Image (cartoon, rainbow, N blue to C red; front, side, top):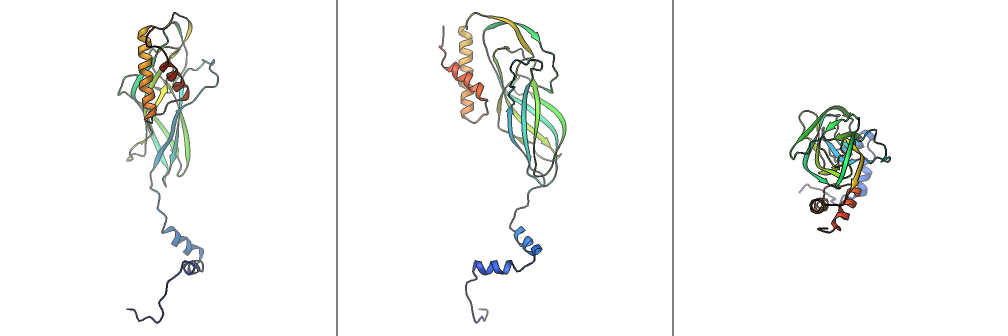
Length: 235
């Protein structure tokens, strides 16, 4: 068709030889043509979890701390403007202790409501450089009068709003135990009521199912819930 005297297969080794006689700038230009350009704005929530306090006896600050791990996979700086905590659902695991409570004096960063569908917002100003990972902590508290020795469990959907025109970065729904703003100064324990047994077993069954479906739950909460699954239905 083209009036060639010789026509043969052009081998990969021959292509390689042609490439490497070019200048470095030319080689880079050729190779970059096969690489996808990262989007300008692409912030991801890598992880969201409750920070464990090693000193369980330190009640000087009883706030629940959670940590967000963020990664900017974009080519431009991500300006984080706001973080929201959406209460998907709330449960309370009871102990049937009768408490005489004393308030703890502390300052918290954000207040979470136990009401389903409530939204807590926190305005922040935080920059994450391109292709870098960062971690942000929040202290959570709630006005809900929870059992100081029980668990007050909040199913939370966290969203990170950044750069004016971008959709928020989100992470899977996560269960967080938000400790109440008071500790027990003294209590007596007279045994569990049948109502409490029913409440706690139903709660454990529901949350363990959520965990199986992919909701993030801390190991110590799983252990407590699994122990309640072994409890009798009535006493």
